[in-house]
Image (cartoon, rainbow, N blue to C red; front, side, top):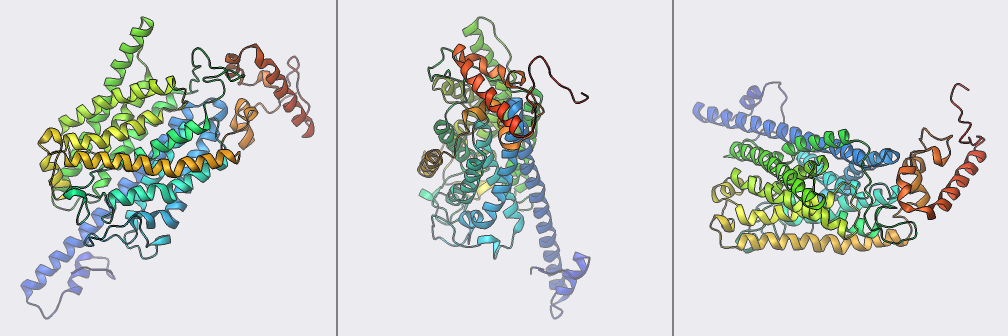
Length: 525
């Protein structure tokens, strides 16, 4: 018996009123207890998803703070607005078509496999709205991964288009394939792939690998920030120029908010806390999340210290590397947090820290400019986290989380079928994202809608796109852009003069008088 409408304020009274009056007293009592239990369970599960969704959505603030701290002061507003547009674009895209493509018409008893969902557009016919809310927060997180990578040089229109495309179609197909019971890779399907299917508990591949691989494609086609790897003539620099973020405090705040939000990200993926063994699953997820992040952070700190010492002769404890190492550990445990033992989480975090460090250095060698190291954090460790399931998945843990353990991790006595499924899922995500996002970003680039103009990049995107700069009445030499220009050499003097003339003309056209270096006015003059 399921109560679908409560006219009384008491669950007990509603269940009592819905009991069959013709049944015996014992049957009526049993029906009432079942009714009360179901009503309370539904309420608890709904509240659990509200709590988890709130934590996952709070991660948007973490991404925003992290990106804002990593960019130069002249690009802070632009970076923050792009993070806000992620949430807005993801909400509209996932509401209109994204959810339908990902989970439309899902039926756990239907053995039919589909490539994409075909029902529930605009949430029509959706009963569990909280499930939509939770999944929207995941889609928004996947889109936000790219925000920091493209910082300081991407046009606003391109970013909004990308956000809608990813959350409206690219991400939903991945989610459908791995998480929907009608997905061809899903472990929850009636007839899963090779009797096992792909295990991705909270999204190492679905969320992080999708977002991270998109970030790599976009960054490669967009090109590095001006002066990062090449001088103004396009000649490679002997040593890459570091563009330090303007606030280490904001970076650290963002990292801690993300870590905190990850407890909702991972534990919420259990979707319920009232079913059999769900309390054990959720508890294990929280513990594994903590251990992997801690292990990765410490590993990155020590490894980076040793690496710097070998290169320069004197080691240093780098905050940004350690912080990103922790985030890499969180990404790596996301796919396996509900199916591995705590000791395995420590090992997974250890490898994640090293993977982040190696990939970060490799990107610099390849002259790929990732402003916030999102690619090594999310893409590399999304791959490792998905692969690690096939190594460390434990029989009882899989049984608790998925209700079956047809195969387990290779190191836990498995025959390799699960590992092969995990590898296929990695290749599928990489191939799917590449097939769609390479043409997408190439088209934007061809149309001139991808990268900002050089002058806008030098002056700062806050000034170009948002029109709010304290130094509106100052010449270029007086603005905080000079620290980025010095690597270009003497040949950049002409560029400075051109920008100066452009700004003075703009001031004259707006009725303002350009100020000279020797006669700077103040508000009180």
